[in-house]
Length: 268
Image (tube, rainbow, N blue to C red; front, side, top):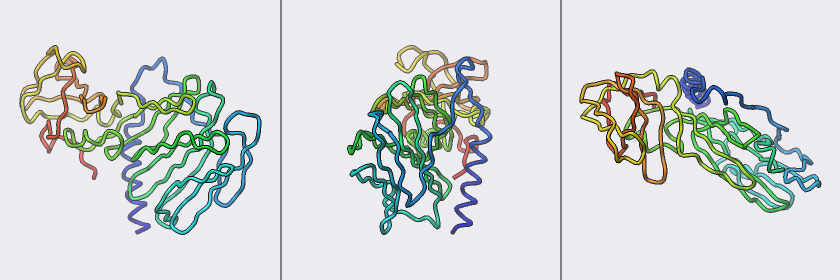
């Protein structure tokens, strides 16, 4: 089982590494990766995580099948199925947004070919933020505005797109400000996905925007397209595509495969 876990992680790591070049605005390409402190199991730490000038008591420990985090008198479950022999666990303190005067505690768990990332924030003995991002790991962040970039695959927040385009990897963005996490609507695809030539399984209408009102062009059945971004706002979903003539548009995503199965990416 340990060998299977390592093999799965290696395959997913390779897929993400292939697409690890950022393809967003190069003027804003600088992003940080540093953390403030690593938290090891069964060790008590003193660190001011809420910016009030007092050092908080922080400890990560296991109890039965649970991995727990205690901050002062507050105890939160990091993982309700804690299997250290099968999964790798990493807990660190970050300062994602230098303007909100508080820090984050982040758990990254890795196993069975996927990552999960949990972000927590505390004020004294109260947990004010506890968000888990599945099939995702922190790639970078920009402390001037609290924007985090997560390398994410098709079991994550954008998982419903797998019904339409198959397996994928993307850069999911989340903004941390104070004790709130704001999920962004657009995730750029990785270069590996952008380079894949998708073949339309039927005529597809591409719109000029995600409002879906003005037609930009039609991707004819059997024609090629490239996927540049995923857009998700509630139940509204679009993929940003480029056709073979270099024009961009937005195709609405439903529950069925938009492209020929043989042209999609499959790694699971």
